[in-house]
Amino acid sequence: MTTNLRLPGRPEELTLPALLVRNAAEHGELPALSWREGAADWRTLTWSEVRHEVAVLAAGYAALGVERGEHVLLMMGNRPEHWLSDLALVHLGAVPVTVYGTSAPEQIAHIARHSRARVAVVEGAGELARWEPLLRDPTAPLERLVVAEAAEAGPHRTYASVRSDGARLHRADAFEKGWRETRPEDPLTVVYTSGTTGDPKGVRLTHRNILLQSVRLDRDTDLPEHAEHLCYLPFAHIAERILGIYLPLLRAAHVRLVADPTAVAAAVRERHPVQFFGVPRVWEKLAAAVKAVLAGLPDEQQRAIEGACALARARAGHRERGEEVPAALEASCAEAKERVLDPLLRTAGLDRLVWTASATAPMPIDVVRFWAGWGITIMDAWGLTETSGVCTVNRRDAFRLGSVGRPIEGLELRIAEDGEILTRGATVFDGYLRPDGTVERAHDAEGWFPTGDVGRLDEDGFLWLTDRKKELIITSTGKNVSPALVENTVKEHPLIGQALVHGDGRSYLVALLVLDPELAPAWAAARGIGTASLAELAEHPAVLEETARAVAAANARLNRTEQIKRYRLLAEEWGPQTGELTPSLKLRRRVVREKYGPLIEELYEAQPEPPR
Image (cartoon, rainbow, N blue to C red; front, top):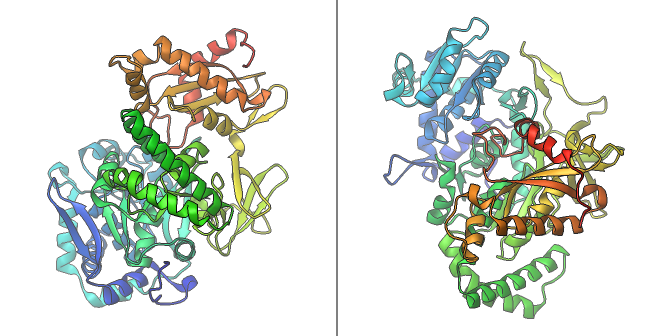
């Protein structure tokens, strides 16, 4: 069900603080925020306790000199100091700006200068090393650092001291008067795009943008009221800001902070959530982990699981086509799920899921089909930071696996002549922040915003993504190729975890392929290949032969221009820390091409073999 909680006003007239007032008054005893303190049990604040903490912190940040309208930078993990500070700053009328924890010093410096922030709140010593030089930089306006880890703060203010000042100085009348001055058109946050190329851009989003987005997204999902959300993606990502801050305020839901994103699978096993969101790479890795376990099961059990999965996929196919599921299939599917799949799903903590979703990049169809076989239909969505999150969503009563769904209420889509997706509506941002605080409009005269994504609308109104406009490969023969299509096709083989296709201005395509760190060892063990590192596996004859078969199978499904003519198998997984992926796990093609430039050139030095 979608939430039927009372709204304290019309959606377009709301501000975030008004929702917190309602939650404290009408749902004050419900759990709002939970987190672990060390290895101890979960600590929880109710909605009434959250509002008290926000009021105290708002007074503390005001005493620090934070003023209405100014930007305050935050670089912390998913911890209560981050979540509560974000809300406290909003209640002051300030604008919280979360910076990715993996940002390089030059990226941090750019954001600090561009946002003109005087205050930054950081986690500990690891962050201080990147931020302290800006205090001495005459080109950066940064004046003060606040540190969450008191033992690592050194000469800087601690979060605890800010809270202590707030507890002493808090006055209820001043707090209530202050948040009521906020208007729906005021900025709620600035999100700096993670930047697959160039410097990050500051996307300014208002209370109206975000709350209309939240209300409309809520109408397109089917969740129990006050549902729990596992919050593990960084708050610098628009998806987690929506799912981990703004939607819970709307729904009076329960946010459970997972400080270490690599521990999310363990949190799922412990909590058995009813909802789960993952970017495509997260779903790929979860699927790889499940497949690795399955590979070690007896053949008889594997056959039983595949039979149950086939029934579940058949059932999903009927629902996808809008057909009534035949009674016999429904009964067989339910029996197989209960007997075969549910015991395994319970072990993984996936047995209670009623809403699962993905966004940010095209979802590989083999991954979608894999999870459909387990009765988990991933409702793929599409949107951008500039659109306050999602533009299109698949719904439980209207979905097409492989598509990104239909537009949310109040949003228009149009496909330009070159295939670029254009959009307009009240959830689309006003424009990019300029260094002087003004906004650079990004719409045309009719209000259409060019998204940079390429796609098509089918006859039923579902959107299908093709690629990023700037990432389309144009070969030397003038043919357009979608690298994502080719990459996702070759990644359907379990050995291949990541791929990059190159060929702009060339006569044929080459690829860099990366072994899957979970599935490759399991694949090798099942074939009697002893324990070996990924580097050793990348050179093993059996692995090389299977990789050749994987590329040949992919080529057989692609047209001649799209086929991979030469490739190289790599062992080291790409990630944000090594720079090949953005913090939101999107491929930084330019970085990969630069890093492996000589290797790519080698692939073009010899004539390719004819495609098989």
